[in-house]
Length: 170
Image (tube, rainbow, N blue to C red; front, top):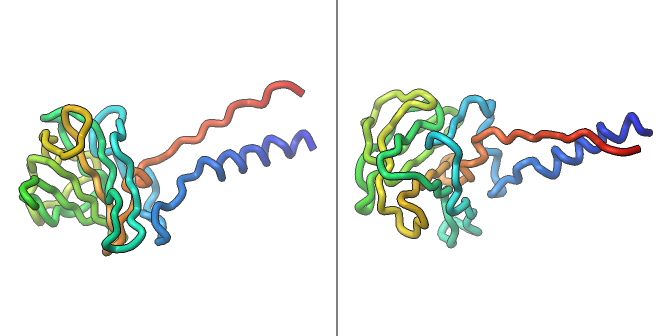
């Protein structure tokens, strides 16, 4: 029994800590986590998390806001093709299509790329600018993820490391 307990505990910890889908759809990506990187360098600060809408026109937050500083390089989260780089409703936006029907969006970003351009994971696509409404810090990147018309939590693209601690005592 003592030999089985650590294995059972490990399975339970992984099950509890595993990310839960934010929508009732398929998982965001079938690609391995190593295929994705954070869109800002350094440690991420989430200032507002993804909140799935109850229905297509319902309230929610269709992305994650990440704290940063104006002028910080914004990086492509994965390999893909830029499908849009320009203004939407007065805000500069970059959208990238990836494998598996995924599209990531980044705003407000002063683009350094143009539509049709291939980008590699981790390559700069522009710089973060101030002006994201509701941002509690100097500047925030709104990072979005969609598969078709379904919004997904972009933070699920990033690897989550689970570290188990050794059992102590008898």
